[in-house]
Length: 177
Image (cartoon, rainbow, N blue to C red; front, side, top):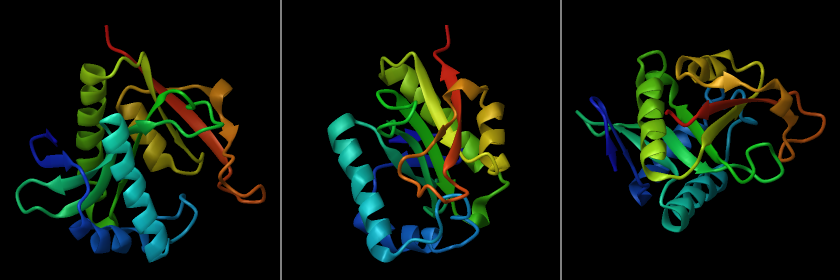
C-alpha cells in the first residue's frame, strides 16, 4: 500500500470489480484504449493486476481517495508489454474515471508510483506509452519529468493493424541520482 496526501494505492479486491467495470464502460475514458470493455474483459484486466502483484510485488494498483474510499481508477507499475520497447523494463500507467480528471489525482498517484519504483526496484528507468492523440496522458508524462524517446515509438502488437490507435509514443523516466 502507498499513501499520499489524498490517495491510497492498494491491491485490488473483488468489491472493486463493478466500479472498475463502470469506469471501463465509459467511451470517453476508453477513447484511446481500444473502446469500452465487457465485464469479462475488465475482470480479466483486474485479475492480471492481481497476478502481477502476487508474482512481481507491484502492479497497476487500485487508486482510492483517502477521505471517502472512492475508487478513482488505477495507477502503478508493471512489467512492460512484450514485443514493445518496454519489454524487459518497468512500465508506469494510469487510468481514472472521468469524474476525477483535472484534479491532480493522476499526477499525485503517478509521482508516488515512480517514487515507490525507485525505492523498491533495481530499474534504471521506467517507461510509459500512449497513443500520439492522447495529449492528456503524454502531458502528464512530461509534467512528471519523463522524456520522449521518438526512437522507441512503435506500432503496438496488441492493437489491430488497421486501428488508428496502433501507433504509440514512448517516454522514459531515468533513475534519480
